[in-house]
Amino acid sequence: MNAPVSSQGSTQAEALAIVNRLVATRNDVELLQHLEGVGKDEFALMGELVQVYCSADALCRGLIAILRKKREGSASDFAFKLVDADVLIHMRKEAQQTILSIDTVGIISAIEILEMHRDFRHTFSHWVVKKYRAGNYLVAFTKNKKEGENRDGIALTGGQAKLMVFPVAELLIELDKLKGHCEFLAELHQYME
Image 1 (cartoon, helix red, strand yellow):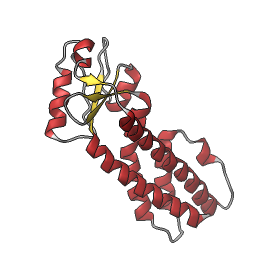
Image 2 (image 1 turned 45 degrees about the vertical axis):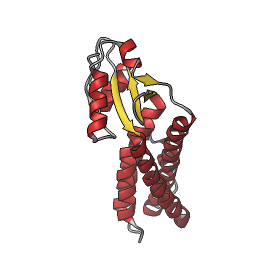
Image 3 (image 1 turned 30 degrees about the vertical axis):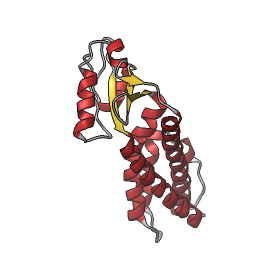
């Protein structure tokens, strides 16, 4: 199978070897022979990653609204009309522009983690995910031309698939990071209200 590859989420040699093995398959049938369906644990992990990210997104929208109100003097529903891709951009902007005595460094750090995890949320919400048969890895793939190109700018052609390999152990570590930043944003939100 001749497919453009994104190995984001993994820098380990084994994950790269898996990507190369999957890309070398000649067709979908051969690709799927390396994969199996995900179980309850994997579904739970993906669902938790998506939902924790969604909670962080909602908290950022609330913080944007609070910070804009403090800065401009009037309430606005601007933050609640933003498309997902713009929430973190505006959160960073509001944190940098605030005159309030708040942890702007912490906010920027949380935004950087959320920016990375936005790909996890998007992938696990929109791509097919299977488990690699010979290890503890999740393999996400799409044949959707727009989805594939949005990921890394490389267009898919002729039924190609875009692949991503995620070591489950790394996803668990990233989930803990995401939860920690979400807790920070929740505390900040509560403090700001």
